[in-house]
Amino acid sequence: MEMNKPNILVTGASGYVGGRLVPELHQAGFSVRAMARSPQKLRRRAWKGIEVVRGDVFEPDTLEDALDGIDVAYYLIHSMTSSGGSFAENDETGALNFAKACETAGVKRIIYLGGLGSSSETLSKHLRSRHKTGDALRSTSVPVTEFRSAIVVGSGSASFEIIRDLVRRIPVMLCPRWVQSRCEPIAIRQLLQYLIGALNDERTIGETLEIGNGEIMTYADMLRECAAVMGKRIWIIPVPVLTPRLSSYWLNLVTSVPMNLARPLVDSLKHDVVSRDHRAKEWIRTENLSFRQAVSLALDKELQGTIISRWTDATTAAMAWRTPEENSFSFVDKYETRVAASAPTAFDTICSLGGRNGWFHANWLWRLRARMDHAIGGVGMRRGRPVGSKMQVGDPVDFWRVEEVVADKRLLLRAEMKLPGVARLLFEITPDGDRQCIVSMTARFWPEGVIGKLYWYAVLPLHSYVFGGLLKQIANRAENGERDSLAAL
Image (cartoon, rainbow, N blue to C red; front, side):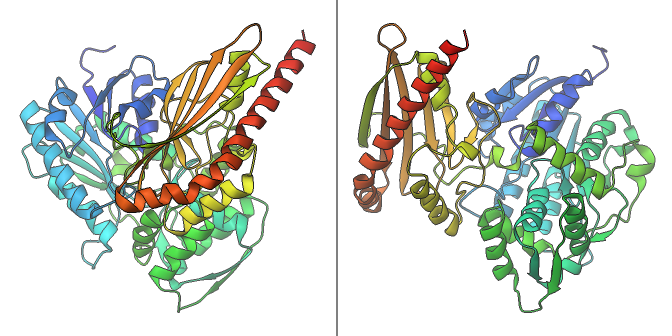
């Protein structure tokens, strides 16, 4: 490694852009430290040679160790996907805390990814927040390079999934006037090249730079282009009566994006977001991909199951990562069964739950619960699960997230649906003789007040049917898998 290369910190490493930037920087030969509020989410990345640290911009004391010895810090944190509070106020507070910590630690530079939008017009809350976050980062003596982009197109990006879902599910669209707003998209690949290229060009220090692919399109154009790539045909009918609120409800219902993300995004769509300053294009060499090329690449990655990061990776429900006291009051419901299969086979069967595989039993009830969660702005089942049979800490699995994995022994899931409390689902496997094991499943719920207790008693009658049936199906599938593997020997 070259001695003059800076030590890099990437904040928001569990997010969509951060999850792509970290390995790219490492591959380019930089010493990289990845920071996340919940570092356990980063274990699934299987990054080698990359230091992972905990840091929370709302807890300034956690930033000292994260910034120790760092020369350049990437700021890729956004509060819009979190629950509770005002994302605009949170973004500004977090950026101020981080800027002060960088100044104290002697960081030489901050690189920030914000949003396009002309400051000469009244911007939406989302775009205004992006600009104010940049201002907050510039509030100290540490120089800031701010990149401003419009929608990012790539496998796993929220913008791409909105467009893809609309095209896939609705052949005839009654669309609000914002479909005629102009936008300059950028492929995730090109965006990363800009973020990394700034490290090698001193002209970018202290500058605010606008980036895009140079292709000015309306949102209607992008829908049509995406449809063409997917081999579909759509009809778009603009309707002036669709308000931003109605549009956000519509996106929440038909796309993978939840309400807390859909609403600020829709509010921003009324603005033209195109670059007017082209210095970044002149200074940094990138691979300029058209919107159609970016969509084709994204669809190919989805088909191959090689999505590196997704916008859902960093999302959590309001109480999703609040740690309850282990000895505090909770409700417990436990089931177990004997399985005529080895512990590894049973474990692999459990790890195949969710996503396209479904939940083996009473899938209609799981989907109904997901639709109820979706209707009130929760994650529902739209996140699916990573491709493959293994689960890793931090993986989203429909409306759960993997909290703990012990190979062939234990899998702990934590609910990220909207709940009046904290819920966990624990699977444990105990070997019991030759190619035999006992599989147990424990549902545990820490209620939040009276409402939480009423919720538990309301769903408890369904547990025997849903969980008992699920355990039987796990046993059946594991035993069938064991017989198939023995027959293949």
